[in-house]
Image (cartoon, rainbow, N blue to C red):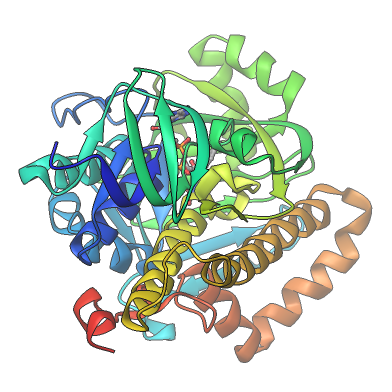
Length: 410
Ligand SMILES: Cc1cc2nc3c(=O)[nH]c(=O)nc-3n(C[C@H](O)[C@H](O)[C@H](O)COP(=O)(O)OP(=O)(O)OC[C@H]3O[C@@H](n4cnc5c(N)ncnc54)[C@H](O)[C@@H]3O)c2cc1C
């Protein structure tokens, strides 16, 4: 260890925390990372993992500045250029094509293990960041211009700012005493890797149905990773079916898109909820990623929001340092809280509204009118796309192609 007093201590080295640690260290801050479990090494010889994420171009730009995208993009990832949305009622699907919006791609499907492992390798290489693993924050107390963290291992470290990126069950959130509203959808997201008769041509396909949407996300080998949102009891039933019975039901739900299902791998299901915090900041501490917000995965925005939190905080801390200020000052953390909480809350309620609009059969006429409007209105399609691509006007500068070097010169 270089020292036990840091500008920033990040708790949680998931996809979000590890990316933040790397961004801050590359921007010249002294950083420590406290992680409960060392990530598993990504194994390219093993089959594709069950958890994948649709990484937006904005998030890819952030990960690039964190030094991990080059490594990730040479592995088995799949960029996609088309999004196809159906509602099972409208005959014409809604199509979004990247070139029409002057985008090279709409997103890239990346295995979560690959993203986390690549970011972990960047931070652990060459002592860029001091790593405390396995370890947990035990208690945190104010100590002058810093916080004193007592880790479960007995180690004591000091930080000007502590970041909780420790996931939905965040211990940091409890330590900070921040209240969280939790809305359980009584739905599970069932995930599996599936091969259809025709290979996936690089399309993220989604069909909305009463009970929840079914998504096929393209993988590098032509198979698809599915996320099938079902009422929890129904998802439990689907998990217990044998492969042949499951394939029959999946064929029915995917309405012949790319032909019949030829094979399906292991299945797992995750409970879905919306969680929103009353604040992201308290006493030289902030929250980010799933520790701060959990949104319905129907538009694949959870980790993208977390990566935008990481970029947003990095920008605010660099600006505070350039202005000669204290990076843990309440006014600095207030700027972060205001910028990121409004963005995540808007996204969470947007997902909530979409889920209600598409999940309710009696709202079909309203849905048809809405889809027709989106199809006809270019500004609306543009806005929708820019937001999904993570490059809209509210996106952090790092997501819009500004580099760390440029931010540090500003
Ligand atoms: C079915 C499904 C599909 C999804 N698909 C997408 C998608 O396509 N695109 C997308 O953007 N999002 C998607 N999401 C959401 C996405 O998976 C999450 O938003 C993302 O994993 C959150 O990352 P994180 O780093 O904030 O938290 P986590 O991944 O939960 O990481 C938290 C880290 O903190 C560590 N930790 C926990 N407690 C402690 C502690 N006390 N001390 C130290 N360390 C600790 C953990 O070990 C872990 O490493 C999906 C979610 C679901 C359920």
